Image (cartoon, rainbow, N blue to C red; front, side):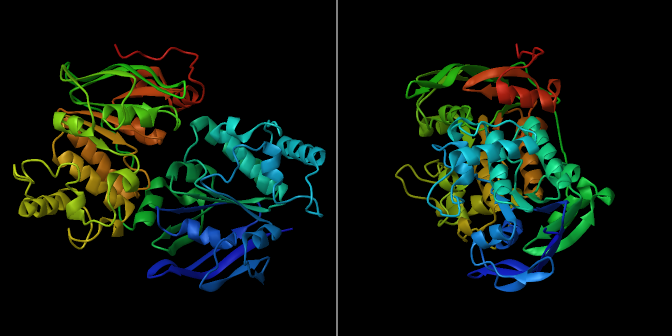
Length: 511
């Protein structure tokens, strides 16, 4: 039986990038050990080395004080180590039992003994106290159920240490609760859990031990939970004091309606992706959109910003009906911070200077009537934007692809807000961004609102959307199923609405 796993002095580089430097960690049996750190701190790389997906440049892996060498993740699995990746490794058009057993057939390797596998899955699910139909198609399962299948896979393969990579990133509060119950059951059965995360509240709720990484180094390891606070952990992660949990409700919401959306419908292959969407945003107000990803949020922001042509939509900006493509929407004063900065927000090979004016390069400030570029103004604008929005970079000339995710996002926010739009849509504004940059970006969104503007925030992070929004709408299967002031909903109520589209008590309507 596995009691301990130890990684000693692990270093790993990818070309000129040093991903890990002399990182060590010890994992004890029957404990939950949380590996905490910002995005890019090296957490996932270290655990991928433990799982045999990568080989270290130097350092040792010890299992029960005996050195092991993993050439492939099958070697790690044979040693009792399993991993549930942030993006699930399931085949959608296969059944639960096929996904659990594939690659681990009978000793002959020739066939799956269906009856035997289903019996074992049912036994394991009973041990973990959840219901699952082994014959169900994976494509028909919820996100939480898919995660439980991934955990079942590791147990089926006799894992005694299970690595969970950002396991709560896409779960509702109710699903997080179920996951934590499963973790406690596994611990009681002698299994060790390593949980990679950057969520401080959940870390303190579930961890027995906590290790913190920063810039590829282990800053503090094997800390006991009882003496720690979110602020202590945040400071360790970032290396300086960082304000946490900043919520600023609007003090002045104007009676004037800045944005009104009516009759928004969009159909794909006969399915209503947006179903009669309607809401409004007052001047000086942030409206947040909560919902599990894939319930119409992406199509909503694309329709409002002109990137998608819906079946029907009546969009009014300060009483004026507007519409058209992206160019027309920008000209009317509607701006978008897109959800995927690298594929739709930036051109990585271009400089910060070029990226900070993307989409606005035809504006009078940056080009003459005859189409000649005002390069001096571009450079001045880039310098000012970098200063105002605290973009850390050697120069405005460097390729934006060389910056951290947080600094890339700050360039996009700078581009959008420096043009003083009348209505700004922030889609996943801090996805993949470190704690320090999150505080900066949230402050800019509050500042934009407090100048009397209207903002729409769409985020899969429930904590973020609750912190930012004065008013909330919840989307489920393309419909708005709840609409009320942010403080009128508890976290559990929002989770229930996101999961089922229903709530036993009536939500407050935004009349």
